[in-house]
Image (cartoon, helix red, strand yellow):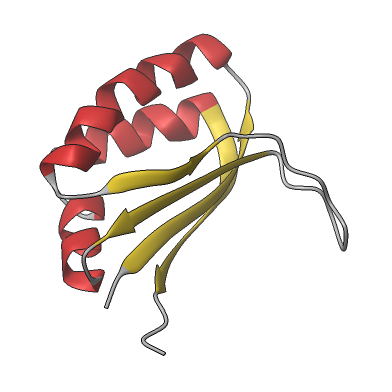
Amino acid sequence: MPAYLVANIVMKDPVAYAEYGSKVAPLIAQFGGRYLIRGGAAEAVEGQPFKRVVVLEFADMAALKAFYFSPEYAPLIALRQRAADGDVSLVEGYAG
């Protein structure tokens, strides 16, 4: 069953965040992930508006966790956290 990383990001340092983006994209692909949403326009219809929404899809939760908790991603998490605030969740997909 697919699994998703869902993030709502508020950039503090656009230059550092751009560096993060350029470094993380190849790593996501290396772990078999792909972008479904990468910061497109969002319109709030209920609750608080999202800022920069990112959704990544992986084959399953094991693949997503292999990416997120990998030693290769750890320094990029630190870079992202310096460049932006936000909420990040790992979410199981729906099997129907």
